[in-house]
Amino acid sequence: MPSLAASRSTSYHPAFLFKQHVACRQLANGISRRQQCRTGSISARRSLVVRAGDWNPPTVADTKRKFYEGFSRPIPGIYSNVIQELLVQHHIMRYNKSYSYDEVFGLGFVSVFDQVLEGLKDDDRTALFNAYIASLGEDGNQYRKDAEKVEALAKELSGPSDLKPQAEGGDLQKTLATIAERSKEGKFLYTKFFAIGLFRLLELTGAKDPKALEALVSSMNIPQEAVSRDLMTYKGVLSKLSAAKELMNEMYEREKKKAAEREAEKAAKTKKEAQTVDA
Image (cartoon, rainbow, N blue to C red; front, side, top):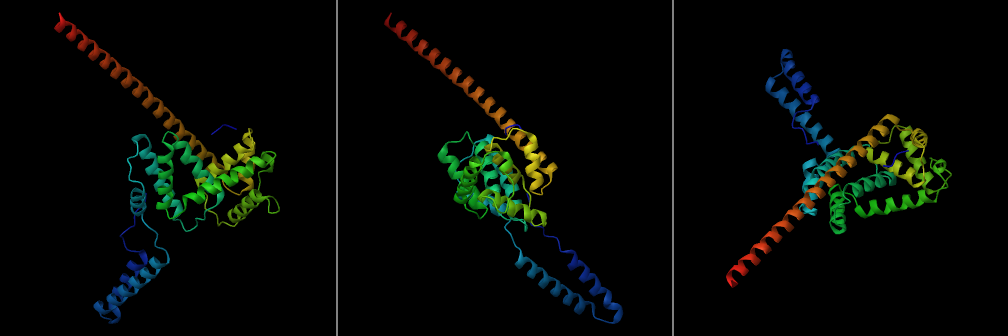
């Protein structure tokens, strides 16, 4: 086993348009166009208000604004686009009606975040992490705490075969069993962060055989194809970031060498001019 944007629509709801159409059709029954259309319009608007009150999540723009309010420092270009993309994807997951946070999801996101931003200073990475999670209305400390908890539990297992959903097992097995049952009932929102969390747990048990991942995914009642696709995408992102970092390091070393050469030339010129004056 290898190591490892949406905005609110302003268009009317179809029910609204249908009610308007029906209202105006009733002219044939002698009902006033103005009166009936107005009645249908008010009814539809009331219906829309009720639905909006039941579920009115923030927009992607709202989340981004909160993030930048919480983290006002400049983000290096190599990380900025990745953070933007992660935040949009995370927002869509977070405000899906089927979303429910769990420790494996938390571990998956923490793993992604730490690997993607490993080049940042610790203080900057911590501040960025907390601002990111807070912008989604969640607690960064809870993510870290849960990630550390399940990592420790996975390390205590005797091997990959013990990493499975089991209602009568240890804390980690019970957590997996709860998630597997929700998935079986169609009440679980699968995400790429969850897939990465599962993979990380397997790594911590010392798994080497790809079949260990297949067995765990099958026992969790989640689609194997989706997990494989998301893990490959994740590995691709890490590879691109690694290549970009190497390029940046090479550019930095070249600039450092050129700066040293310019300083040496400047010092030699100054020395030569001083010798000329003395002569």
